Length: 116
Length: 299
Image (cartoon, rainbow over all chains, first blue to last red; front, side, top):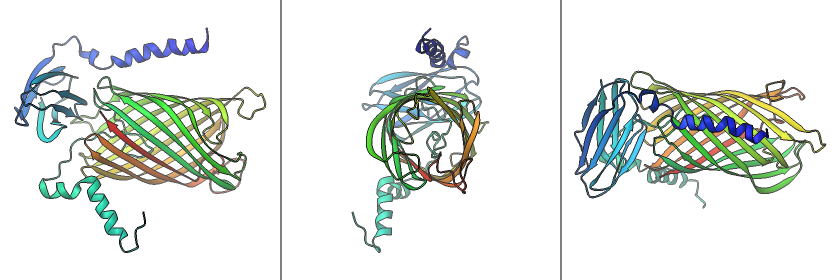
């Protein structure tokens, strides 16, 4: 078998596996649903709670006319949500603690996810 | 641009405040130290960050090497990187590379002044241990295959394949302020007929370990220092030891805006050993100095 074919045979499954890494581990558990609204450049509520070690679906509704970007380094996600629309973000199961998030286009807009 | 002797400190200070916006923010609002991506805050040492899911980034990442035995030596290699993070655990990078060489009178290297497209690289990074509210340690494994058609050191035309594998670890010592980083490196390489004598594939390998400290002096600015210990071998599996070197130097990371940043590092070889030469530095396998400059924009 040519060398490049051997390399491709080894690499392609690895890349496919890595693309699906992590989130599938807990895919059988029903995710917790959290709703957050952005209005007048404020998260409402500014503090939300979620259970630990369960995948989380975060729905962000942007009621402002301008777009916002939900961003969090500790949650390792970012998503642009256009004005007067909504976006959905899938979070991995989290350990207990506080996870800050903010609007990257308007950095005075802050919130926190408390996982218990 | 020329700065008079008396004008230089205020000018530099003014540039600093304009670039960072630090002065304006310091008056308007309290400083907020949010969580930060650690990948680029340690200089040549890479932090464990894999980016944010959905994030894409383009960057120019240039490494300069200068100083060799017996003459003038200067080379650079710039990676034009496209980086993306498809999920919360994995990051990919890829892109072409451009190399420049300016060499004159260096032992065992031909004189040349040139700029070339030099090859392609890709990188896979996998976060295996994530930092969390109760765990300050984060670890990422990375593998970076490279193809070069210009020799990195001497600038001659070659066919070269390398695979840089690393363990990137960092520890948050003070929440959002002080970080300790470390890399473990193993990089085997194979070069086709490196001496032009029809001898087949020549193999070599480099191993190394680093330690770096990074302190966030203001929310957008991180300064630090790092040290690297590198060992070079003939053979892809650390077969025959040929020399080693120790580098130390300062590092800088600066967030210019929410979507742009630069990082820089400068390392000086402070100790080295070449099994075929006498001296306190190893200038046959490693350069006297090296520097790194990365400018990135996220989108």
